[in-house]
Image 1 (cartoon, rainbow, N blue to C red):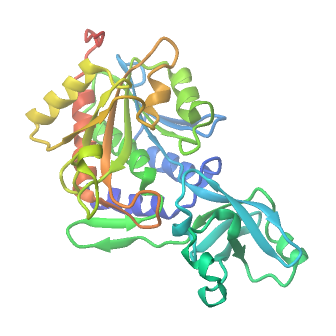
Image 2: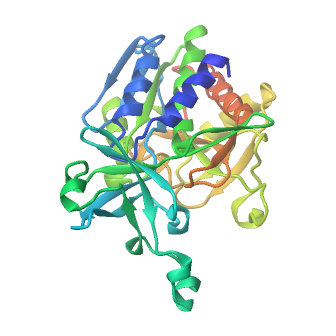
Length: 354
């Protein structure tokens, strides 16, 4: 990717946007889309859209969710300590001792996650896995009144974690799941703007995938767009680190290119088109098996209206659902190029009936 795209990605990663609170990164996404798309808009579900050649055919939805996992304040006690629930799937041990950013009415409220010090724990407590209900957030308040002046029940929070640039084009950050998908939907559209396709290409930054209530924003977004084809972009578990189980999760490596999914949510004809385009362009890839659901927006889009021919392109990601998710920038570039080339290959006469 070019320098401007990488810098935009870094900016997008830094903006807090857990499920249901995606407004800030979504606005940044739409602002960037407005520099090259023919039309940009949003819907009441929190989805953002950017269209290129909107009257073309077939109509292609290129979707990546823009939300991330987070926390939500559910109680403030009289001593000013905040108790919370999780937004999306968390390993509670990752949360222990982390700093947080709470999205308060007047702006970000810094805090930290507290737990009884190991010196004060009984032997059984030391050997017990932490549970969210045993943790709290300390914002430095003197009492409950002071805390409630700054934070309300229902406020969301994210872990405070700066992006880290590592050798070999690798970066680590929170929110990579799935600002990567939202970025690549836009990046593919940017490349299509330089060499316009016959198809109508609509990039979508979908909302609320991490909680998936009612199919998340992807289902309502697909219903409104009524696409014939959907290319869904997400992350998948890289299995190139110690202890990763390739027999159960496949062989997906940072720097090995995108993972192309096969399974019930994936249209087999469109999958073969992806493979054909990748091989012709000499884009490396791996194949990921999903015999049931994919646990991505693909599951919601494939059954929208009368059904959508759907494929899933994923970027290998180490340490998912942590403040230090890691991806390789070359995989992002390859995924964007594969998606753009696939859209260019489509014509109104194509049939994706298996």
